[in-house]
Every structure is written in C-alpha cells, then in structure tokens.
Image (tube, rainbow, N blue to C red; front, side):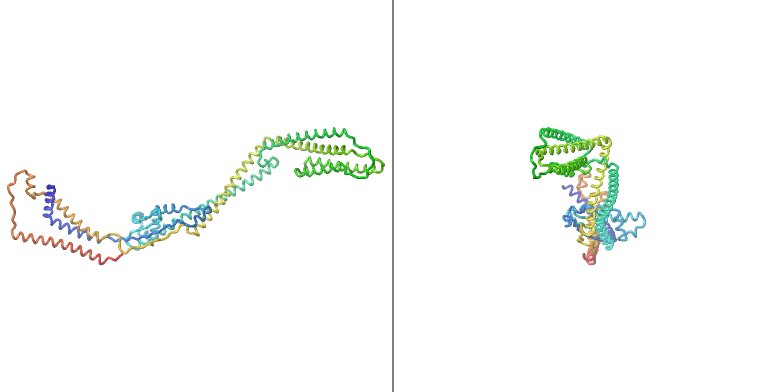
Length: 513
C-alpha cells in the first residue's frame, strides 16, 4: 500500500514539474475543441406517430360473405420493408432530395444516408408506430417524415386492393374458361345422345343391371303365364261338367248378358294396361281385339234373343255355366296378355344381348362425359360464388375503412436541434484537454525518469544514504516562482472564464423547445 502511494506521489510531483505542458495542452485542446464544436452543423429531428386500428366492425358482420385480409400481417410486412430501395426512391422524389444526386454514386450515398437516419419504432401488440428522421434542415426533415407517413398508409391499403383486383381478374378469366368448357361438354353430351339414342343407359342403372332386371321380369311372366294357363284348364274342365241350358218357361224379366260382364271386365283391364303402356303395346292391342270380338258376339246374341222371344217356351241358360264362361274368357285374356308381355320382354332381352359389345362401351363413355360435365359445373358454380365474394370484398375495401390509420402526432420538428449537444461537448472539451496534458506529462516521466526521494534512491542503489542536501532558493527565485504560479492560475482562470462565457451565451441565445 505504501509503495503504491509512493509511486502515485512520484507521478504527481512529475506532473507538477510538467505543469506548463499540461497548461499548454489544456489551452490548445480546449480552443481547438470549442472551434470544432461550433463548426458542427445542427441536426433537427422530425417525428410523427400513427396508430393502425385493425379492429373493424365489418369483420364480424361480413363473416363468410367477404374475404377478410390479414391486415396485421400486411402492416407488419410494411414496417419491415419501409426502408426498401423503391420506397427510398419515392421519398427522395417526394422531397426533392433526388435533385442533388446526379450520379449513381451520389444516389447510393443519398439512399444510404436516408436508411441510417430514418427510424421506425413501434409495438406489434398496440400497433402504435413512431417515424423519426434527422436532417440539417428542419423543413426537409419534416417533409421526409410526411412522405414516409404517406407511403406507410398508402402501401398498406394499396397492397390489399391490388391483391383483390388481381384475384377478381383471375376469377373472371377462370369463369370464362369453365363456361367455354361447359358448353363444349353440353354439346358433346347432346351429340352423344343423338348418336346413341336407342342404346342409351338407363337412369341409375348400367347394362348388366338392366339385363338382369329383364331376366327377372321374364321369369316372373313365365310363372304368371303357367298359373293363368293352369287356372284356365281348371275352369274349362268345370265348364265341361255343366249343362249350357236348363228347361224353363219363358220369363219376362231381363238380366244382364254374360257378355256385358266380360266386356266390362276387359274394359277395366284395358284401363289398367293403359296406365302402364302405350296404345301400341301388344297386350293393349290383344285386349282391344277381344273386346271387339265380344261386342260382335253380344250383337249376335241379341239378334238370337229377339228370335227366341217369339217362341212360347225357351230353355233358360245355366247361370253357373255362364259364370264359368266369363271366368274362362277372363283367364284367356290374361293368358294372351301374359304371352304378349313375355314376347315383348324376350324381344327386349334379345336386343340387349345383340348390343352386348356396344352398350358397355356406350355406358362407360357416357359416364365419363357426365363426370367431366359435373366437375366443370361444380367448379363453375364454385367460381361464381367466389366472384361474388371478391366483389363484396372489393366494395368493402374501396367504400369502407377496414384499416383505420389515426395520426396520433402529425409530423413536427422541435425548435432545438437534437444534435450536437453543445453544452455537453463544450463541457467535455476542457476535460479532454486536461487528460491530454496529463497523458503527455506521464509519457515524459516515463521517457525521462528522475529520482524524487531518498527511498527511491535507496531502492534503486541499495546504498546507505548518509544525508540529503536541500536546495535553498534565493529571494529572486522565489519571487520568480510566485510570478509563474500567478500566471499559471491566471491562465486557468481565463480558461474557466471563457468556458463560463460560452455557457452563458448558449443559454441566453438558444431558443426554448
């Protein structure tokens, strides 16, 4: 500890001996530094604050009807690309800074300067952004901040509107494309149906299903024909066991003819067949022929009945015989109908078997055409819905404020320059000069060391010291020393007075913020 203190004392005494070096360095550094401080150009800071409100009431109201762009992401992307080269070029044109940059090198220097001096700070959570810029001219600084604010708002809104416009244009082009495809497919389907009119596949069934259904109908018709034939035989057998007439006196009462019952039954059967088939169907044709034959028989019977009325006694017809005759006629009609139906089904099966190689190909081609048509139609309808969504979204973007930019603080410039801080620099310059002088003195001590005390001599030589000779100054030397000290103090006082005068001048002449 004592050694350290002794060493510090050695340096202090050495600095005191070199005090005039410190004095000169202090004055030179102070004067040079103050000149440099006053030569610095003032820089003024322009600032603007903007709040981006993305919570629009239209979002929940138009949910599902319009596309809601991710405005937060767009604003965030704009904040990260605000200092891009195209935006800096726009700022230079809007503020006329590009007039002084003629060469590419000057333009690059201008854009680098703008990048280094422009600051965009904000919080992503609150969407509050601050734009600042520093320049020697307050007016230019303010114009640059105003240009940046304009670019920030216009680019954020314009990007969404540009995307919507491009989307609408793309959807319109796709709609025209799909409309053309739909018309082509409709024409192909129409031509295909005309070309394959008689072998077109059924609704919801293919060739093999139809062939199987026809086979089932044939088997069913055969079974019904066998039942009807067996019943007719049974009725004929019962009829052979009955007598056609019974001896009885002529009665004056009239009853309905059996032929009327048969005709009525066949008329009802004809009405039933017309509900299923057209008039060209074989069953309907056969039923009509049977009705015509019965009507002819009825006419003949009426003529015979008139002839028998002249006789005194007639033979009455057997009612059981008549009923059996009617039943046999009905059974015969049913057998004829079933035979005609069986023939029609067999013909239909033969036609299907004849086209066994063509119909599956036709069905496959038809299904492919229908599938393509359905896909085109579904996409076309989907695009129609998307076009309406895009139109509503475009109207929402152009006629409403989906994003509200609120300028919390318009661009303004303070009266005081933000740089340089002259009071601080003026105060720091003397301390810098003092440090320079002390550094030179220490360097001189290290280059030209000297012995300052008995202890230092003893430590260096290890020789016992018998005594110390003290120098006694004369009156003239002491007077000269005092004069030097007074000059030294006067110089320091003058420097302090000059510093105080500068501070007072700065305080009294500087405008208030």
